[in-house]
Structure formats: C-alpha cells, structure tokens
Length: 315
Length: 261
Image (tube, rainbow over all chains, first blue to last red; front, top):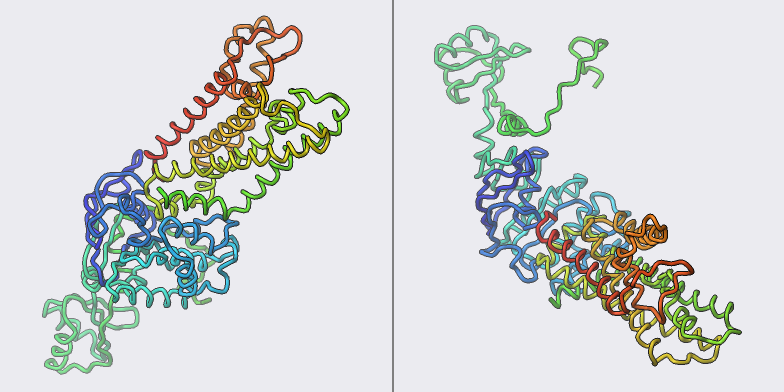
C-alpha cells in the first residue's frame, strides 16, 4: 500500500507537482498516466525522497528514507540507463544488493527471471534500451519487495517484451503486491492496469477504475447504414438524437443507445444495412482528458502544396 | 552503517578504474625512487633524498600517488552523477549522510593502505640501490613519512569533497590539478616580486603549499632572494590543509543533503 499525501514540488517558475494525493492498493496494478512532461517522474522521485518537496509518501506506513534495507520493501525502476558503463550487469546488482543483504544466488535468480541470464557478465554499456529496462526491472525485483514503483518500464521493449512485462506485473499483483507503474500510453495502461492515476501538468485529472476512465472520457456513437438514411435521420432527430452524416452516407448517431436505435428502425419499418457501435479510441479519450494540460504541444505540420487532395493515398 | 560500508566497498571493488589508478600511482611513485636510485646511488643517502625516494617525489612537488588517490576520491562521488547511478544508489541506500560517511571511510582506508604499501615498495627500491635506509625511524624522517601519509589522505579527501560539490568528474579534476600546480605556484611566484609583496603573508595559507609542510625534513629552501613566507610548522601546515579539505567536504555534504539527487 502506498499513500501519497499533498505532494507538491515547484521549480523556479513552474509547479511540477501540484498537491497530488492518492492511494495505491495492493493486489492490483495501478497505472500512473500522463503526457510527457506532466510530472510523473518528478512525482515518483518526490515519493522516494530523491527530490525534495512538500507532502509525504508512506510505503506500508513508513517513509522511504527511514526504511532499513529498502530494496526488500520497495523496488524501483526510474531512469532507463543509470549504470556505470564498465561495471558489468551482475556487479551492478551486486553493488545495490550489498546495501540490502541480498544474496548472490538471488541476483542470479532475478537475472534469469528477466531474461538476462546469458549476458549477466556483460557491461550494460552494450545493452540495448530494452535490455537496460530488463536490468532495471531486475534491480527492482532484487529484494523481492511487496511494493514496486516503475517509471515507464515498457520503454524500449519490443512487442514481445511488452507482453512479457504485462504478464509479469499482473502475476506480481496477483501475489498481493502493490504495483505502481507509469506510462504515457493509455492503450498500454488499459491492458496492464486495473486502477489509474491520471495527471496533467502536475495536477490530478482522474483517480479510479480504468474502464470508468475510458467510459467517462470516450463518447461512443452508433453507426447506421440504410437505403432510407435521410428519412431515418429525421425520425431519429425527432426522438432527440444527434445525427451526423458520414462521408460514405452512413449516419453517426450520438445521444441514443444502440438498442433504442434498433427499436426505432423496427417500429418505423426502416430497412437497415448496418447497425453498429463505434467507440472513440482510447487515445482520443486520453487526449480529451489531458488535452488542456499538455506541456509540450507540437504545431500542426504545414500541408505540402504538392500533396494531392484527399492525400495519404501513397500509404 | 555496515550496509553502507559494504555498499561502498563493493562499489570501489567493482570499478576497473580503481585498479588502474592504484596501479599507476604505485608505479609512478616507485618509478621516482628508481630514477633517484640511478641518479644518486653514488651520493651519500641523506634525509632529503631518502624522503623523496620513499614518498615518490611528493615532497619534491610531484605527488603522483596522492593525485591518483584523489581521482579515486573524485570518482567516489563524481561518478554517481556522471553516470546517473546516484538514483539507484539512493533507492538502495536512502540515508544520505550514512552514504557520504561510508564513502569517506572507504576511500580514506584505501588511501592509507595504498600509501603504506607504496612506502614499503619504495623502501625496497632504496634498499636495492643503496643497501641501507638510515634514520628511517628517527626524527625528522619518521615524522616526515607519517606526514606524507596524512598529506595523501587529505589530498584524497579533497578530491572526494570536490566531486560531491561539483556533482561531476571533469570540474573536480580541473580544480585538483589547477589549484596546486598553477594557482598556488602563480601566487607564490608573484609574491617574489617586490611590488606584490603583500601576497607574502597569504602564501602560508595556500592549502596545498601548507600541506606540503607535512613532508618537510628541514627548513624550506625557496632559493636566493626568497621572501620570508613564515611557513607553518609541519602539523600547523597540515592543519591548514586539513581545514581546507574539511570546509569543502562539509559544504558538499550540506548541499548533498539539501539538493535534489
């Protein structure tokens, strides 16, 4: 169980973390979601006492800095490659383990677990980003901790690695551990996490169930194709639905559930070629939740003059 | 604290540079003794030559071993920032003062052991060339050799403090090289000019110059026409050097506790 209370951190002119309070429960994976630069890493560093700021974070009732041999209680993965280039991977873990009473056997066990067994005596300098993440995860798991805090652990992993990481975190959560894992990708979080803490520009946007977040921030619509589309559109509008005509003549209906649309078609005797539900993508939900709080916003690329109208047909 | 010491010891042992720096330091110090042996083996072995031979040229202004051990000191703290390992370090060992205390103890112990080993090697070289090492345990040689040990220790501690203060390797290296070799030499040189004689009373407070007094076997000979710098005694000079190192370390330590890692 992690309890963060009134976390606050400001740099000279910007508030990086603005009064965040949340709880991370054991037994589930809690995702920590926010766009790049929204303050996820700073929040995690603040929680661990790496950065100084206001507020307090308790790990099973204790502040991180007062835990003796903390790796056995809280496992962390923060930056991607915080390794000395010439100290081999096994020695890196041995170094951290030496402050936490970790045995050599456990080091080898963890390296096998994360799939670095064959390269454990190699220098992390030659590791790919994915391998570095695995070593970072090995570091987090070293002391077999009840609590895990991972900052963007899937960064640089290939699809197979992401799948593996997802399964591993779920398994660890099922063992009753507390898992707090950050990401800037909602799609990833939806597959991995049960609960969400969503922030933007350092402040809390949402805290709760993942599916609820998706429901709250996505508007689902009903799509209808019909030979008598125009006629049906009028009937729908009379019933209070909002109807937009799509580019291929389909009707996009919001403000009415799919079964009500089907029922109306039946009672009005209108022939339907298609009746389906369309959900806005997760990324759209994420954008609508965090849109106003994006730190680094890119401008739209200018449209090339030579581009054909309609464009993108080269794809 | 034991965990912190174990951590620091593992850190030092698992770095290749540790072995290189100690190896080269020992080699350079012994090399000076060998060169002296070839150059002066026919001369009678006085205190001056004997002390320079055993401290590897440190009292002659080229403290090889001390510089290499100071680099180990700089790496102890500077590497953590250069390679970003300060973050895993502090998640493995979040008690910051304990970490710094352990770094100081481990680097200090290493420095003392390596310096003693170096002196033993150099005594061996002296015996090989002259067949004797007279007055080794008599005043002033005994005190001067103990002073050399203290000098090297303070030198290494200065490096450690600078690495932590600058949170990196390059700037700390620049200071540890420039300060004794350039800045202090220039100030001392300027003090020879009559128009700059107001610098004379400053010279004895220059930390590395004062520290060198630890290794003195006789009154300092600055050449003809040198102003009277009124240098401190052996232990007085040592105290100036030690206070300088202590100031750097305490400033760095205080900042380290306060700063974001």
